[in-house]
Image (spheres, rainbow, N blue to C red):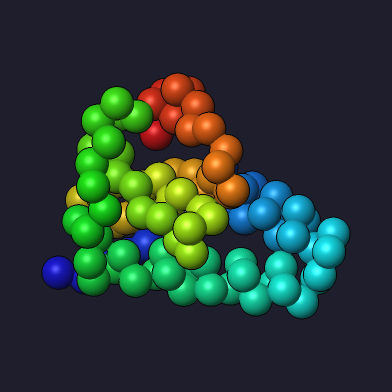
Length: 101
């Protein structure tokens, strides 16, 4: 089954934050990193269930790690994969994630 991958407002804000953080050192590296991250998230359209479920974060929340630097929190709803949040470089996943989706 093919799913539609959608970024939540929170995830879009996280992408901007990740870009800005990396861009302090290298704007071109930041752009490349964020583009690769978006592509990786897009692969969930065909392999949505590959990330392990983390019920402690909320019902149906799954995680995927990107290049050992970003934890992608997402869930599958109907025919969509909704990217909830993107946590960069060891950020703690807040318990508020449970309420955000």
